[in-house]
Length: 358
Image (cartoon, rainbow, N blue to C red; front, side):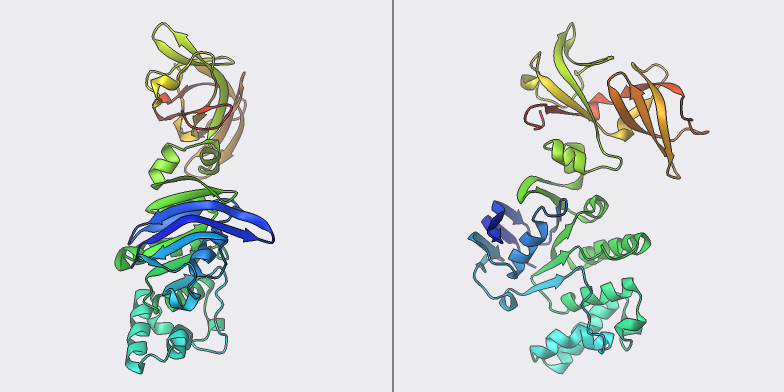
């Protein structure tokens, strides 16, 4: 395994700057997930690390070696693409060993690597089958195994689970997490799926328009989003945003909006940022909106969406609509009048003009 360092990386595609000077360090043995919407540059960045996309400026270091101008074949990287790209006429064993045979490794070494990868990915009983006889999940495991047999310094995954159904995605997510734990290898994984990012990553790098928005552990990025984009991108249902103003009360700063006046004494915000009259957005995740008959916020349930273990309820109030998670039994019905409490200690406060976290 090896650390990866991207230093002021710039990438142009079709005459347009896709990545305008990005710096990021990935530690040895880390599982870093590049997360963002389609077109944000995350796959382009991954391909630049692999040497499949030329860069306009900056440096790429793998294990301390400058590989910026190195040929992809010499970077010692294992890559798994969205498409399985298996050879249909070859058995699983031949697909796994193809790259090693091209490199003319000794037969005993090829056999050892194929055996180890097949055992790790539960493919041993499938080695003589061809891709057409495999399920989608089995084919993707073969594609992953083909990267693993390289014994690479870094493994790159470009949305490898996006072609699978929900059940297979969940299964392979678990397998990938266990695989990383067993190997301790450096892995960089691209996805637009926040569930994949939250469950797999040791750290998440959120991207928008080729620019890093925030890098941190899943809990840091989810609980303390750096800006409105990160806050809104992560979470299902997404974070609620309440527009209001900061005010000063007898017991300290307060958040004031239509029909709402909340003390901010427990908010995780720098007191220097709490300036009276400042326009702000209060961000509250649906799981932190609690139905409470003594709550300060009166609302009406306009929509209830059952999901099994809970239902997502939309709450209309004077200031707009909030979403909350309801686990009461029997479930609340549409049209009901309820009172709510917002967990200010776990809320986020953003500057209305810049969108940055206070």
